[in-house]
Image 1 (cartoon, helix red, strand yellow):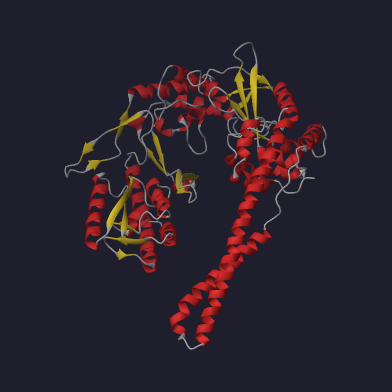
Image 2: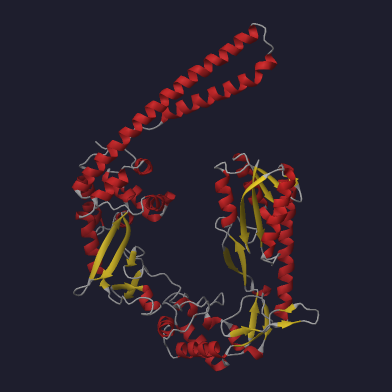
Length: 577
């Protein structure tokens, strides 16, 4: 039998050689069992509390291809320490008819999954408690109990027993000077955007070695994030302000604010960078920057959304476009991170942008010739699939008839005196296959009729768009028209013209929404795509990435594809006359 090996080490096993040790141990186990090792998968320095690991994901994918029959690991907790995840791995491999064996437990069954999964989950919880307790001890001693803060360098010391002493820090002169500069500039009234831009122009690395951004400087005052909110710079360490929980869907950590009573505050005067006077000047300026009639800082509040906000993209760097003046849009990266990141400082008036995009929606998307080519290609693909479906149905009907005849022959054999035990298994298999074939045929009969697309649907589209644009000026139904129009757009790319002033606008249509509107679907269905209902727009956009409704050649190439065809039929809810 063919075997695959999986190995992993994380924070509790800090030697990279541990991977090689585990693989060697698994190879020796495979040799003793007479198994042939065909592949080895591994994840280095990755926690076993999540399935978001490239090695284990590759193993699960390739298990379905029949590349191996057994997965060997040193212990079950190497595959996962999460109770739900280990059960999922087991079920996935079981479905692929792949067994699990470990060097320490042997062949894995449902009993191991239940018992070991519970034990591993308890281990993780106990480890978290002990780790938190140890970090709290460090924080109370004035040592670092987390990541290294910008402005400081770690001190590496060894205890008499040979163990490393962790958490000691000293001022980093160069970074401390940058911290002082940020506080001084902010206190003078310079915006976080301008401060970040100046630092990037001078080539000063940010806290993570990358570029500075406005949010890196102003952060969130309540959560204590951002340079100007970090009290360590005035010699006061606050630990346990935030706690982190792992999102089971993405495997990413999400921060949540702890009650103030849980904070551990320690005075560390040796680590002071900013004096109290400068700190208070910054606090005073922060307090003054509140929006009228609210207590929300200007950088945290949401501006009123314009018709196309969130859909605009810079053609130079790919960053978003946002309001840079009262009635103009510009590249966010060029203004927040400076010309070292993007040189696109051209702006476009909101009125001009909306007029040009609405005109393009009304007159350039859903070109009649492109639509005719699309319908022709769609019909050809639908006919090809229908022919294939007919052939498949005939094959299933013939197999069903044969299965019924063979089953009847076995019944006759039992009546004639053949012992039932000799034909029982064969009869059960035939009966199961009969039910499977009947279910497949019933499902085929229940399939909806194919969608009919008429070449003149571009006329319907233009009429609907004109009505939506007119609806923007009317109080009743304005919001629905607004959302429906946004739903027709995947993105708007703005690029400075190579000759002359102004910008070139490239409009990318959201094909699923365009088809909905063109087939006379209710406006609220198109609007729901824009607002996120049923995630229809995002899923359609992902499937149709790179297909341009205006480009006839690309459109036809995209239409001649069964997956594309199924998507079209999933978003077009009715027949078109």
